[in-house]
Image (cartoon, rainbow, N blue to C red):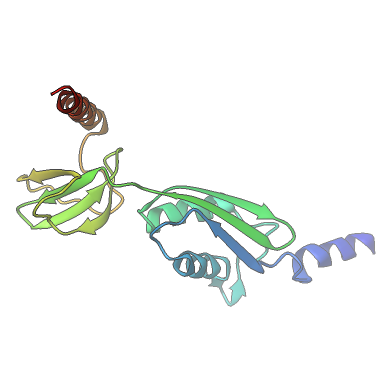
Length: 173
């Protein structure tokens, strides 16, 4: 009888069904978009049966993988279960390092310091961000790298050093 009670509590009582989602760290993305996405993921049905709504057995690592894939602007996501029915999602959004424009197809993307294109952009007339005009025919999708990371990190490092030198020259003049 105790075993039946435990099985009922775990699988059928609904006590572990997701009731609340707390999201922290969003700056430009809408909380409601991530809440709706998470709720949809938890309530996905297969063969008419809700698959993952039981927080006790939900694979939050799988959810994190899907969030990173479908929200390329999110750089880091940590998900914590707070039993019996609360989910905490902590995110860090990507910060723009520059704008990469593919001149052949007239497409521009914001990219971060790791070289990941995460959001469409318009080509600026002037910018405080690094602007790269690329004349190669190499299409890129959101969430993909626009360049080889190690090479570009060296370029960014050199750019920042030059910027520091020019600022120090301004102060000494």
